[in-house]
Length: 257
Image (cartoon, rainbow, N blue to C red; front, side, top):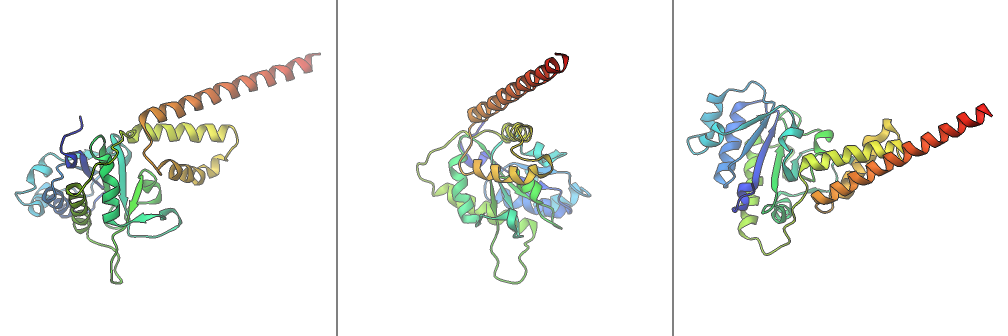
């Protein structure tokens, strides 16, 4: 159930963090800014005592109530809007937002949807495949040669910008977006259908699906819209199967005559 306080609908996802101390620091940063939900995906060498030391007594509740998930997709299943973080540039990491702009764009979703901010492993960050699960990508600008920030620092910067934006918000449209699990099911159906009708090749489908995801992420896709698109895919599947049966039947009849 979505909460009245929009920050209560925001959660932090730490994907495969290597150090328990960083989890504690991230929990403290989230708690300082009013975010009370932290989800941890496949942590390496988890040590609750080390995490508690960095969380301090202020954020111990977040550590006690943390949730562990076996995969990033499962941790994001109920999210209607997902923001991924990266320090690296690349062709598949275009249209990166600053934390301030990303926070402003999160505000319209926060009342009626769960909103996730995702942080990758300290050693490599989020991969291209993991970033494809996100609707927006944010990079924290730095002025020196070192562009990579500590995990706890990154969390506090994004949470701070979101805290400010949530207190300065104006009346805006607040859509109920499809949850990630609904959107991912739609993308899988689209991928199978487009390969089946030969719009794209199976060995190159991820490239084309990246562009399709970018197209749909320009605005919130609603739950009803995912159902419509999945229905279209089922109808195309039924029609192509029917056509194939008729073609095969015609070939067989021709060979028997």
